[in-house]
Image 1 (tube, rainbow, N blue to C red):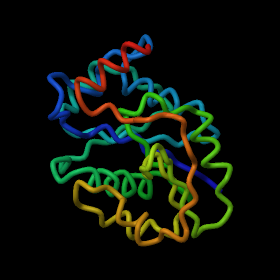
Image 2 (cartoon, helix red, strand yellow):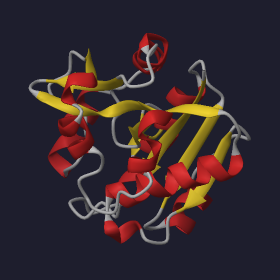
Image 3 (cartoon, rainbow, N blue to C red):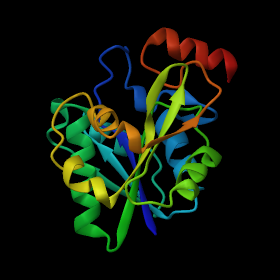
Length: 196
C-alpha cells in the first residue's frame, strides 16, 4: 500500500520567543530533523505543511527534492485544519495513496524506526496506529484511506484526537520510551538541548 507522510510545521510557536521550527537541534533545525527522519522511511511521498512564518522558514530550511511543500493559509484555525490541508494536497498531487502518517516538526525524539514500525504494522484498512507515551496517545499516527473523508473536514486545534476516541477499538498503540516527545515551551527546548 502506498503511504505518504505529512510533516506538520504550520504553527506560530506562541509559547516560544523564536520560530520553533527553526530552533537548532542535532546540527540542523527541529524541522529539518523531522524531514530527515521522514525521508529515511520506507515511503518517498513526504509533504511538509507550513503556515505561520512560511516564507522565513522556506528561506532558512533546506528542503530536498523529495519533500513537497504546501502552505496552509488558514493555519490559524489549528492543527486539524493543517491536517485537512495536507490531505487535500496529497489527494490532488499523488495517485494511489492509501495511508498517511501524520507527524509534527517539534517531535525530535521520533525516529525513522518508529515511523517504519507504524507503516509496516498496518495491515487492515480500518486499523489506526498511534504513538503512546506516558498515558498519552496521539501523533505520530497512521490513518488509512478508510478515514480520509473525516480527516479532510478537520478544522480546529484538536487535530485528529476525536477520531482516536471515536474509533478507539480500531487503535493499535506504538509505544515510545520518552516521557514527553513534544517541544512546546522554552523549558522543553532547554531540556532537549541538555540531552543533545
